[in-house]
Length: 247
Image 1: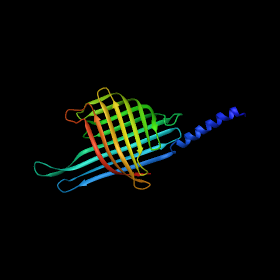
Image 2: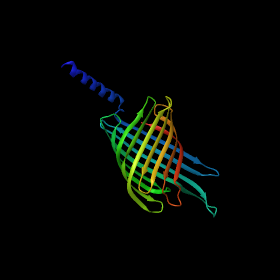
Image 3: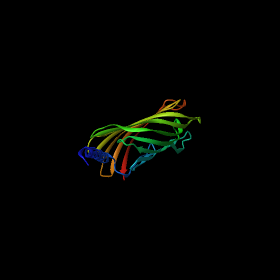
Image 4: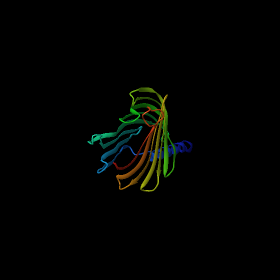
């Protein structure tokens, strides 16, 4: 074999090695987070927020499964003077995404499904199916940003009982910035535009490492719908502090 044939093979081998070095390790990467508040005295109540995130990395596929929930109970004094406990917030969500890796690093074709049940929300039930393309917009030693776009289909039930269906266009972005060796700032945004409503959600979070498997997370999340029933607000927000365990 002459030198002209050897050089392209060496360059191809180097490119494959670089791609393998940049690729995430194969296997499972999971996390569980939990936060709770309990009050007594003049104000009595409990609230719990939690999340399970399972990420599976295969040779040609990258899959993610998420289960999240938020519940709040309060003690309320009735006109008769009797105090009763009642649920004032109840929301849980499920999602799954399967992404097929393309030849170039971080480029993927994906399919996803989501389901949200929000007892007191503008939409009491909201589910979506979608497909699309995702890539990494930029990456440095301390930060990176992934973006996604694609069409989808949604079905939602409003708090007044009206059911809506239709096509959507979905865009998403996820920014991660390594602030220090023990802290990371993240910003996640998802926007789904339908025929009669624009549904968006975002989370800003700061994670601080406690040890090799435990982190403290402070987060502010916001959900917005542009078209809601008259007795509902367009925007819901949540501020939380949770412990995150990675395994």
